[in-house]
Amino acid sequence: MSHSDDVPGRARVGDTDELTAYYDRLGEHDAGALWTVANDIEPWYPQPKSVPVHWSYERLRPLVLESLDLVKADDAGRRVVMLVNPGRKDVSAAVGMLYTGLQIMGPGESMTAHRHQAAALRFVVEGQGAWTVVDGQKLAVGPGDFAITPNWTWHEHGNEGTDAPVIWQDGLDIPLVNAHDAGFYEVHPALHQEPGKIVNSSLLTHGAGTLRPYGFDDGWTKPYSPLLAYPWERSYAALLDAAKATEGSPYDGVMLEYSNPLTGGSVMPTMGAHLQLLRAGEATRAHRHTGSVVYNVAKGRGHSVIAGRRFDWKQGDIFCVPSWAWHEHANDDTGDDAVLFSFNDFPVMRSLAFWREESHPDNDGHQPAA
Image 1 (spheres, helix red, strand yellow):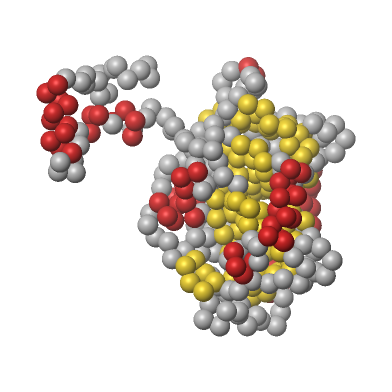
Image 2: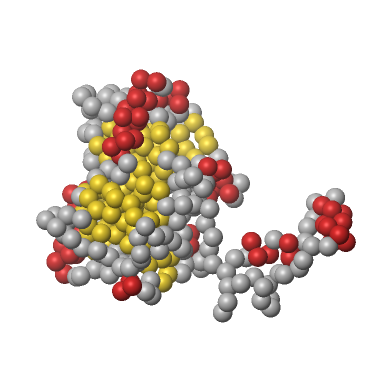
């Protein structure tokens, strides 16, 4: 079917003096004519305002470090350099309805406890000694570790290290929450939580992968994962094991989803997360899907072609793929693997029956790159 707007079934009303006067009269009643906007609000296919963006960690890191001396963490609430998509400055989003930023905590520093409607996740980029307390459970995390802070859970963060700051990537669904006018924020009445005696208790209980607690679980019924921290060592080892048994996807390489160990589903209702391995020299084919993705290069170097544009990346870099944008990835190192961490809004797309996906039909499955 032609995607021209000048076809039957599409709005194609021309302007006249009478219609202009009619629209003015409708406007006086806070009303309007659907046919004047129908082709914009009901497009043939997704028309995201977000554009592909690559954020260099090498260039951003000095600016993130500089913030340590410029602002106190408690004064700022959280000391974060947010990454803003040029097309989504209106909602401070990195892509689509997803927010991300780089949070830094100095040695011995800690923040007060709070909670909010937005769900959050963390991916540690550098530094030892990072911790977070989520609903009274203390989590210790290091480089490459992934942790979640589900919506409306009390949480606070800190750095027990004595030598260097900790930098981690935050990911939140703040724009999505605000789009639904559902945002709440609350500071803990005692400013800090009383953490449990066992550090990483959710990991000790639920982190055995295919082994689930039997006969001693606490009847967990919450809509998010009871496992709150996913260590890099176990996750990377799982990728390497999977790579021994499968070729993986032609579009994503060997990719595993961080999951709720009780249900096998995504870690939270509004955001999912993946870890994917690209073998030495591997290049994937192009595909596109509804839903937005934010990537962090956990290991290696390579490039991605997104909507026809090439972006070269290396460890620590962050880049995004807007909804329905063609994208493909390549590991430029012929001697070692590359690993990409990513988080997305796929759970929302699937729960609302918005999910669609298709492969690139031309050029052997690859895009021409500018």
